[in-house]
Image 1 (tube, one colour):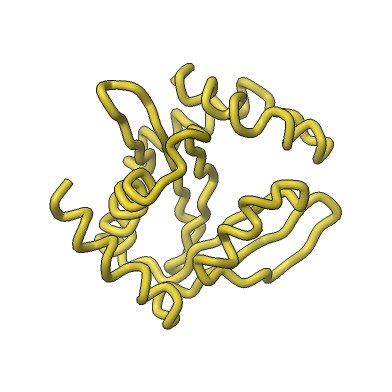
Image 2: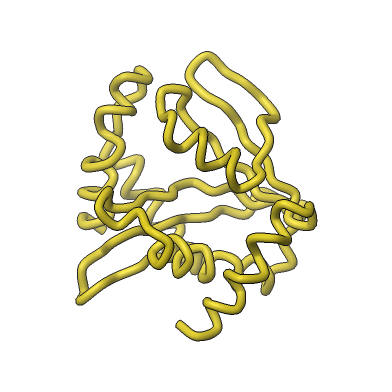
Amino acid sequence: MREYLELDFLTLKDISIEAGMPIEDEVYLNSLEEARASNCLFDVRRHGALQAYSTLKYVGEGKWHVLMFVTQPEQRNKDTFTELFGKIILHLDKVNAKTLVSNVFKVNRLSVAFHKKLGFKITREAPHGYEFTLALESPEAKKHRQWMRKYARHC
């Protein structure tokens, strides 16, 4: 689990500190263990090295929370994102998910823009961040899901 935490520190440490909510090792490690135990830890590796990962948590009534979505900066490309999203989508299809929810620090401008590009809508705002929501049957979500499903079946 340490390699996941190292990736968190690499990509999120400064953002978390700037947002006033520094990464707490034990909280992150516990969350990772819970995700792994519930088969909701998805990763992408190249030659054994962790390139990206995501964790999900079921929150009821077809709603899933994206707890983490982290990518090595030099691996933020179509292949990495497509493989990771493909794994996530296959899981969401299997569990008949209806909605995805994700929280993003306001200072994480790249993530805010990324969520908007994927069709997520801001559903709540707090002092430090936004809650984004994506209805998985929305036209935006369906557009992305088609090609990700196709790719995921070949992984």
